[in-house]
Length: 134
Image 1 (cartoon, rainbow, N blue to C red):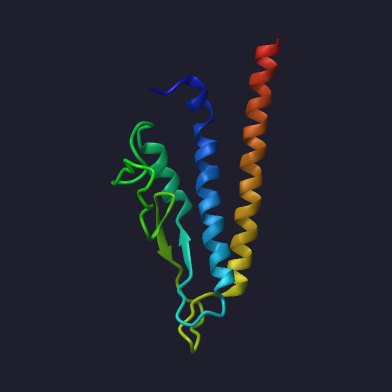
Image 2 (image 1 turned 45 degrees about the horizontal axis):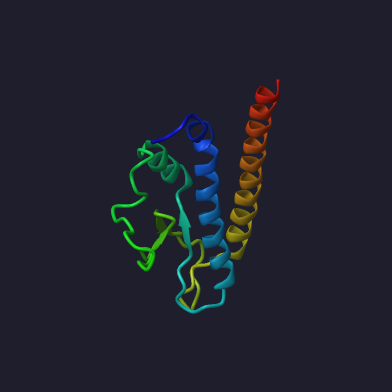
């Protein structure tokens, strides 16, 4: 059962979750910039948001549900989002596809958008508090 408060905050909380997963992937790309044959990964944010918002609130985030706390997360996914490999701008001799300029720009852009989502949620909560307090 979903209540009105969940519906009210659902978009921004979903965006925060996906942005957090994306930030971890980009940070992993940066950390593995010198790892031979490492392939840079990312999440298509728009596609992930569409999938998350179209899914019903009671449906599990992926096709498989964890029925016990001991079950492991699905490998190759970030919070149930499909992980994609970033295309190569300039190939490296060691097979690594991380381009530090691209990764740093994506990291900064994603961090700013994460902060914007936090600001939006704070505004929504302040608005609800103002309505409750009169």
